[in-house]
Length: 176
Image (tube, rainbow, N blue to C red; front, top):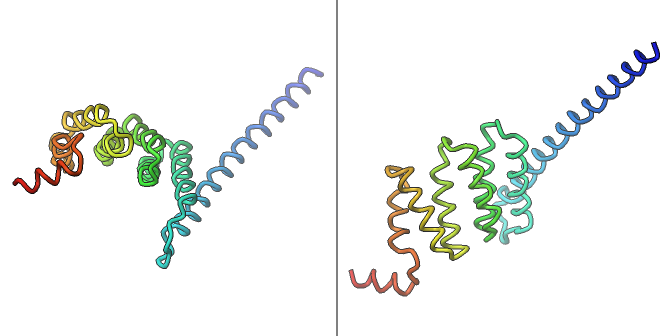
């Protein structure tokens, strides 16, 4: 009888802990949703905004990223990862951008934005990190995986001009 009481108390404890964990997960998800909504309105809802809120943009990027990780099966996850990466890329934060692109490419390889994620990943290596070897690798991977994609011509041009200075590009243009 004493063992039965202990088992019942243990089961009740497990049930309480489990419900608290579910409540905490729901609370985190609501907080992420609220945070995303707040920062989207704050950053993109003010037409009279004269100065970019860099800190707010980076927070929004992180909220998108965290939401996508917490909701991997959701159809919004790859969209939020792309938004997170786009903001990070434009704020010259290559590591978070590449991390988000990698998750899209690994976890959502058939998503409509996977080719764009690979293209932008190569671009980040080229433009922000100045790593032409890695950029070339990912541009070439793009052409192998998506030779007929709408960005394929842009990738070919990027490969052709990879490593050239703006002055070299201007001279080539003037010589045509």
